[in-house]
Every structure is written in C-alpha cells, then in structure tokens.
Image (cartoon, rainbow, N blue to C red; front, side, top):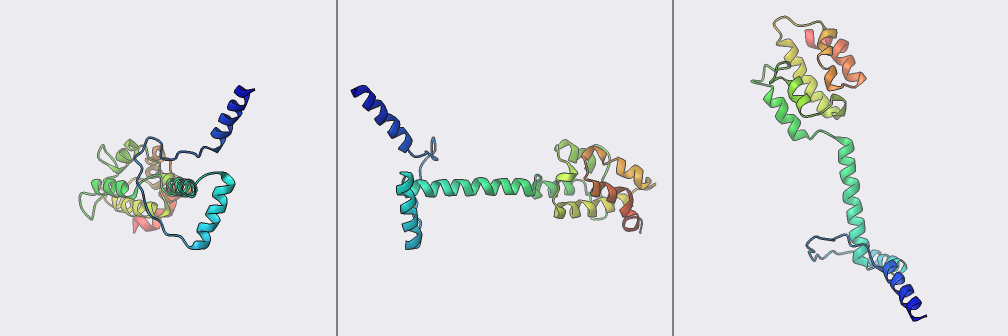
Length: 174
C-alpha cells in the first residue's frame, strides 16, 4: 500500500510539473510590469493550471515568437536582403540587368533554390523592374513566349508567367 501511495504521489507530481521552456538554456531574470488586473487574472490562471505566473508568461512569449516566425515564413520565403543582393549582382550598372548566363538572374535565382511564385508582391515588383531592364538590353530580343520559357525552371505563378509571356509587350517593348 505504501508503494501505491508513493507511485500515485509521483504521478501527481509529474502532472503538476510545469513545462520547462528554458531547458538547456541560460536563464536571464527580467522584470516586466503589468497592470494589476492582468496580473490578478494571471494569478487565477496559474492557480488553476498549478504553475507559476512566470511559466504562463514564458509560454505566451514562446507561442508569440513561434507564430511570428510562421507569419514571416508565410509572408516571405525569400529574404529581402538576399534578393536585393542577387539583383545587384545581376546589375553591372543602373541601365543593364543580366538575365541569362552563369552570372545572370535565372542561374543565380535557381542556384538559391528559390521559386518566383514565393516572391511577395513587393519583391515581384522589384524583379519585374529588373527583368524589363534586362529585356530592353537584348541586342536581338526573343519573342515574349520564348522569353517566358526561360523562366519556367524558376516556377513562376500563373500570373507571373502571363506577365512574362504577354502582358509585358506594352511595358517592355516601349
């Protein structure tokens, strides 16, 4: 009987033990100020869940950071700074943009493992601007359908492919 009681007590202790969000990390003591009514609500929740208020706050912060990271990944799979760097590498000067060749946009973009369809609308506008410059730089410009085919390996969205193959006739050829 004594063993059963001790076992139940251990199980109960395990149930009450808070999740250690700081496991294997250095703990830094911080001070956070809350309005009294929020602190009181946290206290009630802490009692109900049998954890400390600090544990609840750590959970909330960790969840917030996880959600923010997911939102950022959803928003942009391609970091702006890296895209800007790549675009600059393909632009020897303001009036030119290398689209083809080993140092051109298509090869560099593909080497990064990026896809055109993963660009945010703002990023796509930057890329479009550069592609227009690059197209105007051809000595003998390819037909737009042929031009769009060059970008197929970069997996453009339907809208992007449409722009590359037809919608740019007015914009690019001016």
